[in-house]
Length: 282
Image (cartoon, rainbow, N blue to C red; front, side, top):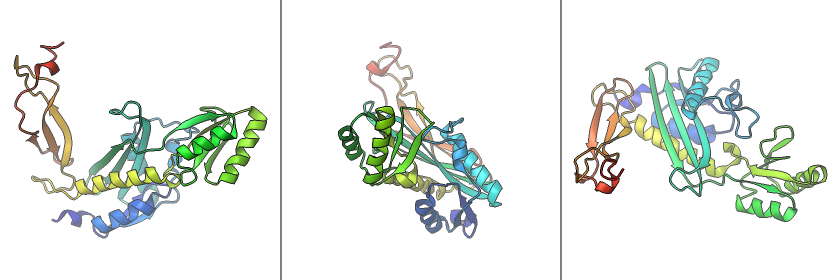
């Protein structure tokens, strides 16, 4: 069976309420041959919101899985796709904000769970406490307003008075003046919901491409979709003492269905510099 035959002609529910179907729908339709649709009964905000009214209780992977499961339950479909994003300090570029997007395809019929990820420093994720219009407008320019919307609240983390999806300067200034009159300040932050943040939407698209690239690779043993990189194997031996180091020596590719896996050596390097050895350089 061709990998595409696992999906062609099937209904695929996109678990979103933030217009991600505009981007994900055409991609999955063209590459998998599915019939994408959105389940209007599903409110993904119940699983967590970026603006803090609802705390996300599980990690991004579990949350994306839950979105898929709920979408299938409400719609009656047995094939779903969902994305989940995370923002914070970039793990490699410590002084820059980072955005990691995870996109999951869940196939109940074939018992498959396939994931694509994208980590990037390309994000406008930011916030600022503003006490003057000059501060407000400087911040707005820095975070690409008005093409990227803003959120305004009384203080960081406050959920009593929150205005979201602000994307016009007249509205921004009017709300800020109201906050200034009442509270003497406003905490302003980027609205990271996909439909209000083109930069984030683009990253979701890249994560979707990563997912689809993996979906379309069949397992060498069982022919199931989704054979791909699952991890890196450490243990490159130290050049001085021969002990295994934390440095990677191979990539591991595996099948999500049958568990078949294979190793692929990384480069031509046979040993690691002793400076990276916990024994020689503790």
